[in-house]
Image 1: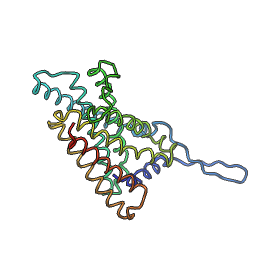
Image 2: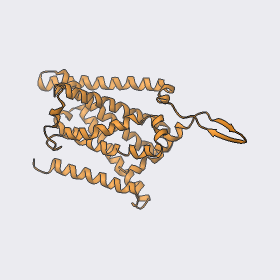
Image 3: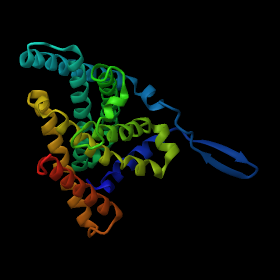
Length: 276
């Protein structure tokens, strides 16, 4: 929950981007060391075997989600609707992958040497966005027949939880397009600041899937998402208290962490305790 707790991971990412062969330039009597800059998608090309395996596993994970939703719809409604199955399966796969990404980050904090696997978290995050992108496209096609104006039938997020999704989507888009070694190198210190937005994006996504159709979560895939989300939030609060306590709760990151917790509580109150 404390945006400052990812400093080790971001430093690891920036260190990895600089692990390239050094060259030297000689100008007169002065010798300068020049570090080659990473090219766009260079890391993915070098580690293509991992990327391919992760992609295959992700597709299988989504196919399981789709098959299960298709079965659930057939059991509930007596009609296995293709469109709704696509919408639900992409949503559950994407939200679960985002949870895996944040959960892996907190797990890495227990074992600092595991920080070298930061690319796993990044892969979960990027693939999670891909699933959510297909979820959005499926919703527009099957629920609104291509008319996006219908999405905003109400701007009250408690009446229309799609608004929470609308808030989360651009944040996750920014996270995805800046999740390359090239972006880390180009943005420098700004990269960490930008990626702190993930906490706000995740907050919005959590209330989106909790409020949009609670009944759709009452199955094994929904339970997986709920348990993952609980572990993410619990571990983030734990590390927030542990990290901020060492700094006497006096840093900017502590203030932002407290703000995020407060926003979770306020939205939960209006969502579940205020009569609609």
